[in-house]
Image (cartoon, rainbow, N blue to C red):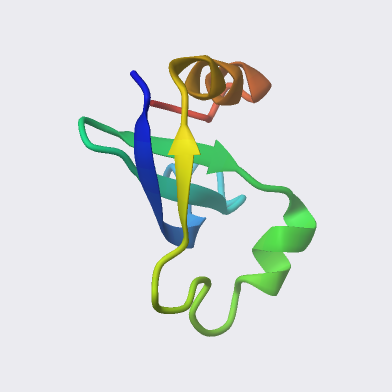
Length: 76
């Protein structure tokens, strides 16, 4: 599904099994989590990870499929 996405945070984890932060994007019909690396996790450990207004981007169905394929903890 194509749509406009809004970045909610760069500090989203999947739980106790994976403490590496990820970006959490809100689309019209679902959420997308994109895993970041260790360096980004350390950088995001203090303070807000996004500023107002929240960043937005156009996202295609192909892009969300690619994000899911990048790492096993990415989800749509």
